[in-house]
Image (tube, rainbow, N blue to C red):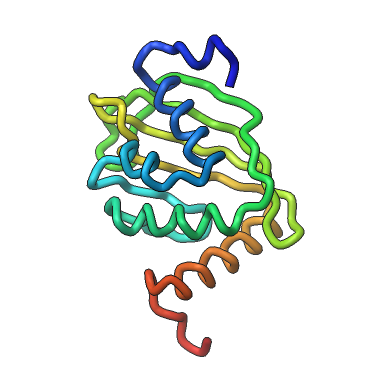
Length: 155
């Protein structure tokens, strides 16, 4: 984080900076403070969102173990309509690179904020398709291992 980024005014940039630092440090308590209780997490491998802080924090526990060498390489602030109700909300887009099980991932985290600057909606987009598949398999295995979701039939 640059000196200019560390003194941002409250808003999407400041929240995004705190989010990036929490991911970098593996700090689940800091993520907990950034999320609303009713946060919705839209995954690139699941049609319906993960909902609620306990489940989303559990998902992040798995993601922090799964991503290797995650680094944020871009940041854009603005506003966009939420998936929940279509209302315009302050937002930040964070571009990242990481590795999962030997596959290089290019991705984007889209954070929608509430009026207090906390993350109320989180959408992840990832490419290429082979990386999406590797990520989905690794995350599902972690969620099952942590008891957050049942094992799929036949596993």
